[in-house]
Image (cartoon, rainbow, N blue to C red; front, side, top):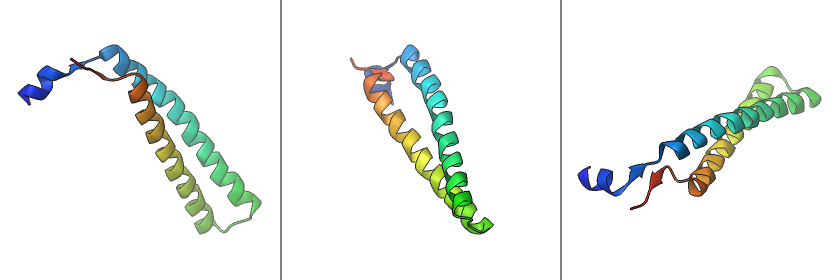
Length: 83
């Protein structure tokens, strides 16, 4: 642990920015995913089990989208400063 902790310094400003933006964008993405699954299920008049499955699938895809957003954000604003 000594080598790693000495080689990289935590950039708290970037960390706060990334966490804040990920929460904001993540809430919007997951809200849209939930609404999408519910709306498509309602339009197709799916039974409750299929409706819940579609909502779950859309939320899972939304969560993946949030993860991809986070990874790209860390590339732009690195959490650790390089020596």
